[in-house]
Length: 134
Image (cartoon, rainbow, N blue to C red; front, side):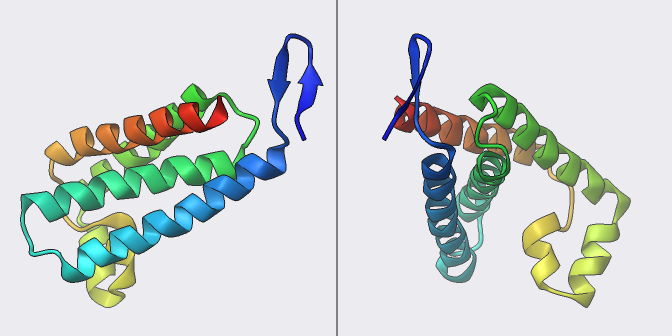
């Protein structure tokens, strides 16, 4: 059931949160499948980066379902850029060597092209979110 708010109809927050959670589970499954089964190379790295960025966008929607989509997109891209730049410190590589799952969260080494791939992943998630919200 939609809630009438002036000239605009808003769907309940719980529906948007549920859709982002279910989609997030699918994105995690796809990311793990790429990590486990795709041959190493640019295509698998690109897919992994884009899926990571899409997941961060979906987490933003889950946490702040009433936030404007562009705000969630900017926050998601900011997070991804911060994580990528954090790799310049060398700490994610050290942490990943000690506890492998951290590599999936923080990566290991800085790669400038990853910033573009994150932007593509966030843009795709944002566009799909906009379509779903209509």
